[in-house]
Amino acid sequence: MSTHNSLWAAYKLRWNRRRLLWRSWRKRRQLSVVQDGTDAIQTKDILLFCTLRNEALRLPYFLEYYRKLGVRHFLIVDNGSDDGTAKVLQGQQDVSVWRTTDSYKLSRFGMDWLGYLQMRYGAGHWCLTVDTDELLVYPHMDTASLAQFTDWMTAQGHAALGAMMLDLYPKGPVADQSYHAGQDPLEVIPWFDGAGYRHKFQSKLRNIWLQGGPRDRVFFAQQPKRAPTLNKIPLVYWRRGYCYVTSTHQMLPRGLNHVFEQQGATGPTGALLHTKFLPSIVEKSAEEKQRGQHFANSALYEAYYDGLVNNPDFWTNSSCRYEGWQQLVALGLIAKGTWQG
Image (cartoon, rainbow, N blue to C red; front, top):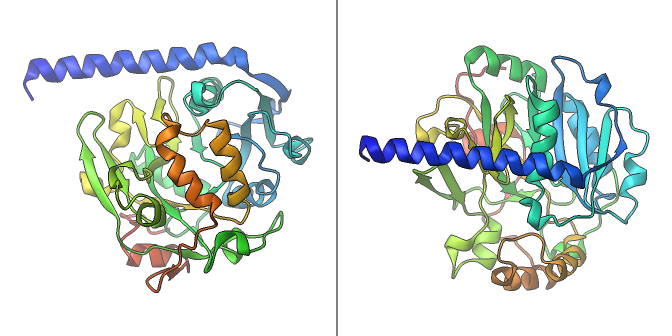
């Protein structure tokens, strides 16, 4: 790329970042405070940001998991839940909640709302941005807290952690299982694909585009380019002016996307255990297909939703049973870098 074209591309990215930040600032008007405990946030607290809807079943374990990991405050946008989610969150001192019934899709799938909260509360903190069906795994997590890990990341000059989304599933049709609130999802969906992933470098944002896994092979075998994106950047030392571009897949400034070994990065990487395929997914998929809020072109994903409604079985003889972060390192799915725990 010529110097002129390179400068022009950088200029356009700066303007895009300003546009996204301005969108988030405007969308703050769609948020109503339900409970605000942000005054209790301390200087070195690790924060978690999440948009959710109707997650009363997942929330008890989700909150317990991340508290044990080291999250000190949860900043949650409730997008019109009507299943008891509000009652689960009510009165929890380390949880602040905002509510909106505006369009999830038109808020960039919740990222505009979270962008405002990150803008207001995130600067100077390590911030996790995850969905309620995503559980972060990182090397040496059994012997080092998230605070110890992020202290090391800071000392090494790493501003962000890249993570692949690892779809978990049961052995047998997904709806034939049972799950109760507060239960560890891995007791129900402990299996994953240990191989079959592919990556591509995208020059515009200098990020890795990762695809593969059970959804790819079961629902998108004929259209692999449309398969779900698995690369994410869930953990970031937040500074003013940062923003996510598409979910947590890419960020601006684009230097934050340089987090995977395929780009020559030397830092550790993690995984997000994706617990989407609990038995409730069948009923939820029928509802989400009707709402049409989860994809930019929902019509393209009708067959995907239909496949989920039909109670799929993802398990094969090649499926791996999850055993821990060491297993993911051995499979080449996450990296330790120079982090020794």
